Structures are given as structure tokens and as C-alpha cells.
Length: 284
Ligand code: G3H
Ligand code: 13P
Ligand code: ZN
Image (cartoon, rainbow, N blue to C red; front, side, top):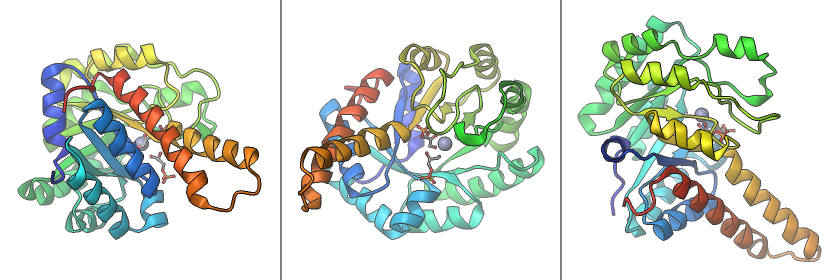
């Protein structure tokens, strides 16, 4: 079927109280793994392209691979720009065929983040493309920030209310204790903050840096209004660990397909697990 918008997927998730998995698509095998996992679970799914993926594979390749995967699929698939850098990139992605975009203005002052998010919405909404924004700073596990420093970057609930009121954005990524990449210890999520945000903001909320977050914390976050959950690192780990295992077992193997095929299957398995955890199995 044709690509759908994230707005459409999250509205249904909101009504029924589950979350949709947003998985980073970095190459053909991972695109295939995401769509296979979604088909096997009969789940709606979001494929997203990061800055790294766009510079690695190229925008046209990503768009075409995901569009073909969606066309062959019998479950709804959306194509989303992850951490978009600005208005120009958003325009390029929409022209290319993306059905949803994130504009990440979290490193800019609040009013500037609001102004650019509004420009993006003014351009995207008339063509049916949904928009995600970010408030607070999510950062990376490698950023070496102290817990107190990280807390200072968490999303302020009142600011979230003001931001949503000013922009009318479709969904909002919030900083409540997760970070991109592999965690050193166990991440602690600020559920009180999530609850406060949820009480003040009436749109689907997005959790970034969700790889390595304990299952119970994910379930609680969904109960408190998280509707889109971003996963990249866990797929990379599953994929590359399986490549390493095959290469170690068969050091003379020179056919990439014999290495990438099992890696693709390992990715299918971890994505299926996440889809089940998010409650989106059977919701296609
Ligand atoms: O949001 C961050 C993604 O997990 C990774 O981004 O593909 O640009 O390294 P990257
Ligand atoms: P992880 O790589 O930590 O799963 O984060 C993914 C993400 O938030 C992409 O935007
Ligand atoms: Zn992210």
C-alpha cells in the first residue's frame, strides 16, 4: 500500500493506548527487516531516516527502498525524517516522498524553535505530511553529562504546553531521561515529569533513545502517553553481532549475502520483540 502519515498511525495508537515503533532504516537489509517484522506482527510501523542514514545511503535511495517496501506490504508503513536539521532539509524530504518529518530545533532558543517549527508545519500540513518537534535536549549516552546536568535539559511541562499551543505540532519528542546510543548503567525515566507533560499537552508524545530502556519502563511510558518509540541502537547491535558471529564461524565466507542474510533475520527478531512490547501487534 502507499506510504501513510505518522499522524494517521499515532491517532489510532492514541485511541487504543499503544505505541508505534519507529525504527531507523540504514540500509536495504534493515528496511526489509523492519517491514518483515511488521508484517509478521500485523503491526503499523514507522521507518525513519537519520542524518547519518541520509548521508550514507542518499535521500533518493532511502525514499525508494522504503516506498517499495511499503508498496509490497499489507500493513501501514510511514516514512519519517529523524532529527531534521531545518526547513530546507524538510522540503527536500517532502519532495522526495517522506510522509512525516521531524524538525529538531531543541538546541535553539525556545522562540526560535517555535518559529521554525511553525514554518515547517505551514509547508508540510497542506500536503498531508505530519510534523514532530523536540523540546528539551535528549543528547547521547556518549555526551558524558552528569545526571544533574542531564536533568537540567529535561522538558519543562509548562514550556511543552506553551510550545504545543503556539505551534499546533502533530507530536512532540520529550527529554525525560533517555539518551541516544548504548547506556552505561540503567536509564531512569522521570515518570512524574511525563505525567505532568501529559496533563498539559494533548498530542501524542515521542520517546527517543529507547534502545536499552527496560521493558517495564517502556510499558509505563506507554501508559502515560508515549505513542511513538524510536529504536536504532538495538537493531545495530543485533545486526552487527550476527555478522560477527557468522564471520567467526565461517572465516572463509566471501559471499556478503551469506553474512547479511542472517544479520537481517536477527534484526527481524529484535524488531518483532519491540513491536510486541509496544502493544502494536495486531493493530494493522
Ligand atoms: O537519532 C539518532 C540515530 O539513532 C542515529 O543517528 O544514523 O545519524 O548516527 P545517525
Ligand atoms: P537509540 O539508538 O538509542 O535507540 O535511539 C534512536 C532514536 O532516538 C532515533 O531518533
Ligand atoms: Zn532520536
